[in-house]
Length: 81
Image 1 (cartoon, rainbow, N blue to C red):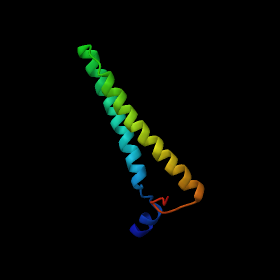
Image 2: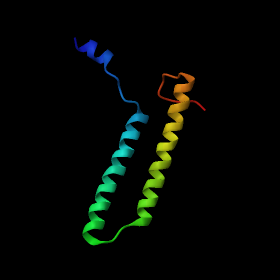
Image 3: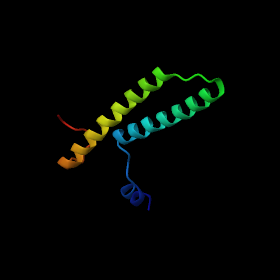
Image 4: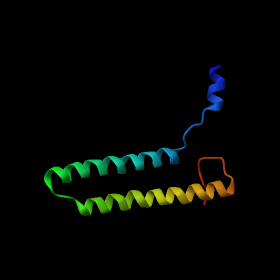
C-alpha cells in the first residue's frame, strides 16, 4: 500500500521549492518590517527595494522557465538552453 502512495504523491521540483522559499522570505520580511517600523517609526526603504527587486526578479525568471518548460512539454527538472 505504501508503494501506491509513493506513485500517486507528487514530488516538488527544485524550482517549486525555490518559489515557495522566495514567497516565504518576502512574507516574513514584510511582517517583520511592518512591526519594526510601527514600533520604532523607522523604515528601511533601500533594503526593502533591494530585497523585493532581487526576489521579484528571481520569481519572474522562475515563471519564464516554468512557462517555456510547460510549453515544450518537458517532464524532467532541468531545462536545456
